[in-house]
Length: 190
Image (cartoon, rainbow, N blue to C red; front, top):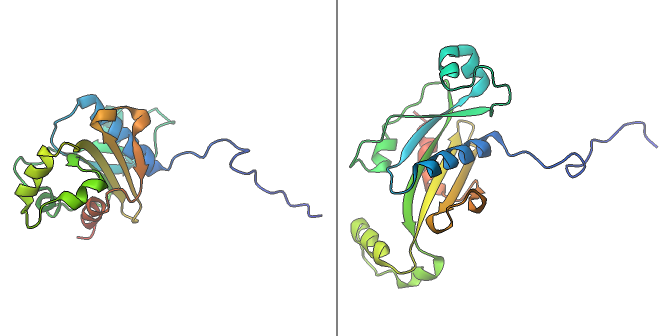
């Protein structure tokens, strides 16, 4: 028999805490939920909270983080509004983040169809025609997607359906919106 002790199992030590990135995504989702629906996309820089406190104490105080030792490890900071009429992919291609930014997140509303509707999509629709077709489909659902990435490649997403607009009905996972996560990751490749 060995004298080494083994660490307690996760069940014995309580629930596993969400990752800092998951916490940031859920914080942004909850913030967006307080603003309501039918809003433009919102972009956030994600910064290391401890680093923010030490390097920008005035900003940390403004954000209510100066004395809060229980603050989340990542702090989302909303950026200027995305210019109206600018396609999201074109806008994201113009972004370059300073080194102090650990990651970024975007929240955007879209309409989606269930997988069963894929077979009924008409062929040869351009982007605008497809959007109109989806908007008229009886099974469409409105969804708010919050997607975040870190410089190190970590990803997280939160999806909230308008018809189930409750924090207990938010779906999370790293690969829920891979195209948007790829576009956000590309903002760190400059």
